[in-house]
Length: 404
Image 1: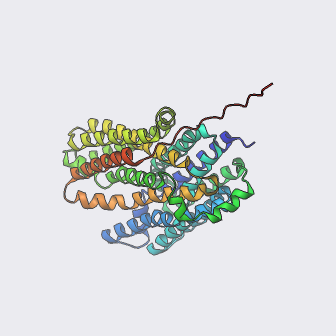
Image 2 (image 1 turned 60 degrees about the horizontal axis):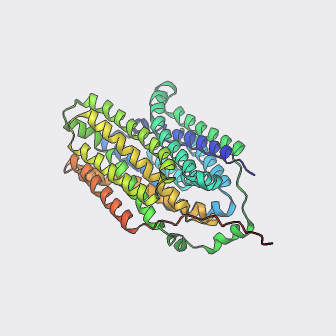
Image 3 (image 1 turned 45 degrees about the vertical axis):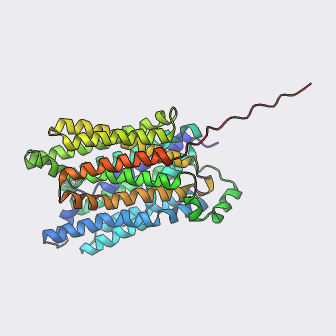
């Protein structure tokens, strides 16, 4: 029998290394685009936004399709394909000569992605039923911490090795992740019948699974609120009277607090879903997150904002892991990767549109961004409480008693 703990270590380590490499180049991307000959500040901002947005947008579209392939041929092969393509694409980025080359490569990277959804599916499929929340939460923690650390490493690394060579370092991170998955992960056995059944299960059928569309909405909504602070947090601190230089440092610290607390929430979900229903966990976490966000909208002190964002992050991380765990309970193994592809697509769509919406709202009022998040989370809690179906606990059959 395959060792699920060994698989857990492999997937978690590969996810952490891969996501670190993915975000390593973000801090200096505008500088790299300027180095490519784009001088106008507006054009630099435009190409930076397009390049950063292309990958998650395309990944959201093709996620379920790659999941379908993973269900037929195995997730390990698909993750290896994704990592090999990332090694090649990131290496190619070190040699581009035009801004549109960078954009095109980011688009290609998005097409061959699916990495995040597949690692979550691999962890869930490998783990025993009572360890699924722990397995999913641990991989989501890696997804969180990698992007939190990657930009810091990239910011330090770029002046030391140069902007172009930093892309090669990122490619090396993906190569390490490839080695980890190849050497350590063992694909759980699949029945031939299950391998053929995925051909008969349409995308529409997957969307009709119990609570599935609702859980997609939860993941989308939570992710959208979570990512809404990026464009406005530094501006909010500036509005509160903090100097620009000091506010930038504080904003960076607050984002780190948010990432770390969300990672803690990913871990806390396993304990909570063992004692409460997923409906109760998601609804209560959403209400508590909304309360913390309401205090942020009213606060005038950075320490209070930091404490509230820590509570908010804890609740967001808990909600996300619980939503994936609840979805896992209704997904048949033969379409597991496809279904997780849908869930991750909902998450990526939230990532893609959140900064745009936040920017539009923030143009009128910075505080309104936080108020809008409060309204969204409370609405989500009400919908979950009223609509989500609690699955009845599975009862072990009583052993037969032989009659004399």
